[in-house]
Image (cartoon, rainbow over all chains, first blue to last red; front, side):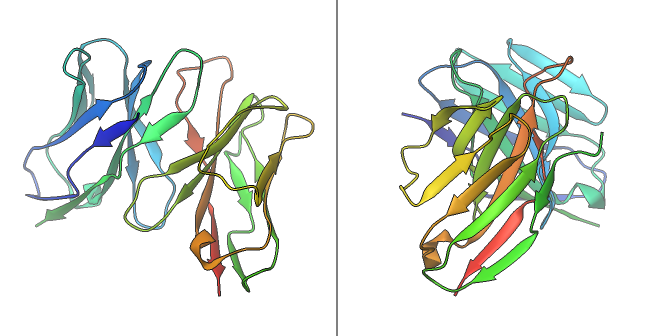
Amino acid sequence: GQNIDQPTEMTATEGAIVQINCTYQTSGFNGLFWYQQHAGEAPTFLSYNVLDGLEEKGRFSSFLSRSKGYSYLLLKELQMKDSASYLCAVRGGYNTDKLIFGTGTRLQVFP
Amino acid sequence: DTGVSQDPRHKITKRGQNVTFRCDPISEHNRLYWYRQTLGQGPEFLTYFQNEAQLEKSRLLSDRFSAERPKGSFSTLEIQRTEQGDSAMYLCASSGGTANTGELFFGEGSRLTVL
């Protein structure tokens, strides 16, 4: 089966650092994606990991451990505009291109 | 490149009616996906195409749902005999092209309300 878990909600303060965790159990694995989705808008791509380790892109970093079925998204120097839902998604195998999404983590950034 | 566009953006219909949504992907993308999203949930996979071939369809998708991509460009998603449980945001996404990282580019979605 396919199962992707992430916390439902998180809160943080402007300027702080927040880590959003994602664990997955899928029948195959061919990449993990993080998307940001503001309320009422389409998801937008943030990061992609297929090998173990950390990928850094500006204020956002994403980490993957395939042996543990675990990833996190790290957001630094939080800004009010970072208040959004963050979706973890897994591409489940070599014979499919579809992404399976978690339920998303709603992050609220307070001043 | 104008991004993925979907039409209509909003649709209100009565239970039992049929509805059709259209998606125009990014022009050089050969893969097109349909997802459904309800409030507080992540996108749920419905089906996807590579060019005009429908490669995969969710087992959760009832026979009332059908999707086509006749010429490998735009796609339509039809829901027959709508039910209140079909109320959701229907998202289309595309991927492919020369710089194919596998990321999906989403449209703004078509919001369906079934009364």
